[in-house]
Image (tube, rainbow, N blue to C red; front, side, top):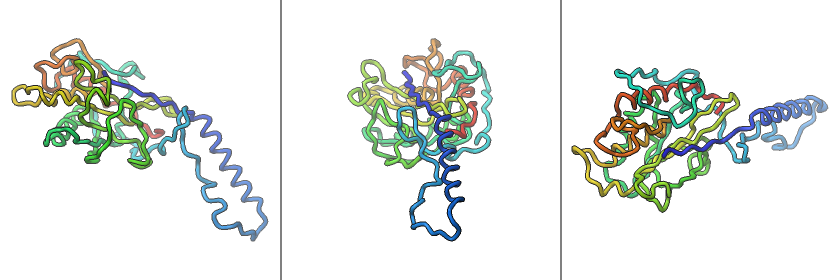
Amino acid sequence: MATLTVLIVLAGLWWSWSAQRSDSVAGFLAELPGGLALPDGLLDGALTDPPRRAADGSRLPPAGLEESPTRLLPVVTPSVFGDQYAFVSPSQDALRPYGWSPCRPVHYVVDVTGAPADFQDSVRVAVAEISAATGLLFVDDGAVIEAASPAREPHQPAVYGDRWAPVLIRFTDDVAVPGLAGDTVGQAGGSAMTGPSGLTHYVSGTVYLDVELLALPGLGGVPAYLPVLRHELAHLVGLDHVDDPAQIMFPTTGFVTTFQAGDLTGLSLAGQAECAPDL
């Protein structure tokens, strides 16, 4: 199952207070007697907008980091169209769901703990496939050590700096991520945020694979975890399960190891969100 975390920004209140604060400081400075010197450091930060905060009071990174005025890669048109696709999120314009901004890169990191030696290479291949199908630009931020959590924070300034945390991809188990209990072998989802414009976009996320996949036999030389990785990456960008066993987004693993017509059509639409300069 794909997971979805929604953060709401009280944008109107914050921007109103910010503007009043800057005006009041500027007015104070304008009324000072000529030649009056203030102690060094007295007004440090006084003309800087306060940090953005979510509805729960948690800090948010500055808006628009790495955001381009236009999408970074062209819109993808599938060579073959299919109608067997579904989206995790509600649609914002009756055609496209909300998704990642195509005007900034999607950063990701890999924790290789418990993974096979070629896991990072397999992730790069699968991510490149997702990029080619969605028109989203992905950036590999390298290997990290970060514990799996079902409630991973999308903003971790102490770990990743004052930006949205990159997507975490790793193997784990149902002790760390209870959603992997039973027959579930993967879990992924994007953390979503609604900005001042009223549009909702994914800003961070996770892709977790069950370590039990490593004990399963592959199919036709394809490791058992690779189709699951593709399936979960599709969840990450917004696709949901479908009832067609011929698609990789069918909820049960079978003989499909890569994306089919319905999957590719859905991935193309998932990559056509608006830009998100306010996030």
